[in-house]
Length: 399
Image (tube, rainbow, N blue to C red; front, top):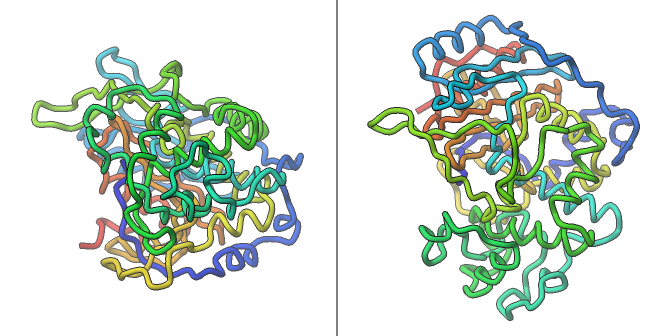
């Protein structure tokens, strides 16, 4: 579901302190539902990054990129444009506010919902999972919510479970997902390894539901999305969302629609949809202190990977709660070392990357409805980031 990006950069357990020292005291003190949520800019074409415009125009003309790109510095939009069609079978062009499936970009919303409930005093990330999940298998006794959010739980992921091919296309309830995961032993002692895990985020969403007394999707909408004005963001867990772009894959026969999303099986891991501007509102609200307390935000972006985690190819990447932190630009042919907070997403014909550079408050959103554009989406995202920061613009990814 998520293509892991091998990104450079190093951030320690002091990640929260690094970020908070880079912003104003009044921002550090901001908490959820403050009345100062940034005003949203008008939704209109903006092409104030000439190098990005030239590259995207060329790619679109050659039908090499389809989707939308938004770049902003603070609240000022530097680039907003869409390319290709939302649905080729229906000849529906993209609009600037077309809704895309976010796939694993959704994970940060689940993590934030947990942390917001912690801010409200309704749970703690140190709570045992078995406090909230009943019945709870004996194997889960050592599990904490923290392990679910940091990919350190040891629960077998969905794709490691038997009959994945059937699960992939079969609608499931949250309880059914939990019951299936509970059938398996843990693959390792919680907290000792990192292994990317969609099943764990489904469990986290169920805990949000239990702790809030509401369906996960209702709590998310009422407590997080609505206060930020994110009217075009929501969950398609019931397969009833309107106005979504069709997802595609690039196969030998050409661009092929991927109509079966079945995001019910990734309810807490990848079921959300959104737009370019809603994702800007999200980044501004989240990273400027309008959603979480100072402590909760520091926990969100801290590195929760074990200290003795085996070396990956390339420098270390920090594993936050539903986000990564690293110098993502070092993956390019003109490397730049700015730390970025980001996550990718890929599911049902979509490929996305949303990144944020906190020192200069640069947001880059790249949403594509072509699943097979992993490298290109990363390159476009980092070309946009480099130009917005005034860095040399890379021509390619590093190999």
